Length: 256
Image (cartoon, rainbow, N blue to C red; front, side):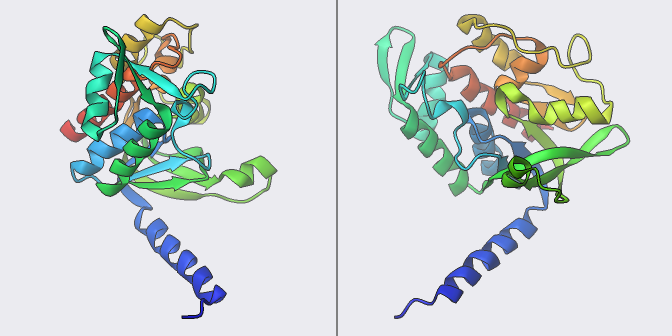
């Protein structure tokens, strides 16, 4: 068979357009395909929810890809190891209570499992605003990441979602938009974004899970977004809290 360039192009445009149209209305929109977002996507899609993940970068994985300072190994505690075992990610005990895993294996394996159970990931897409109705967030305003990088004046499109999860890490991209434009109070001690504190691994790992909450109507925070919103410290290249936060937020949405 002789390959035809026009058919290749039409196949990509046709299939992507069909997929994009299907996911303009979802049960759960997850913003940020880091470890917390990917784990949440896996459990939510596995529970039968229609899940779209929007990642502004070309690649998924967030900070987990690079391990610690580009040494692509990660550390998890015992509870985090149990989550990795669900996905079949190999770990090795370093000392009692400390386990290492290959960062690339962890990210690629979790991502693959999330896609296989039905989550759909849209990369190179940024969230620039939210849709609001009666003080509740009901959707996302999205655009190509390249549009923002180039400073082009191109109008965005929208996605409707019953629930939104901000798992964009330190940047808290969704929460910052809500804080700046929507005038909605947050479920924090001050009612506002408190901000990230300096590194304290033990405390941060525990608070990452505690701070995984419904931060305002229909919007949840997971991973480092949760700690940054609620004033928790950062934790560095230990990722158990991220994995557990992703599972917790999925459970919260499913129970809702």
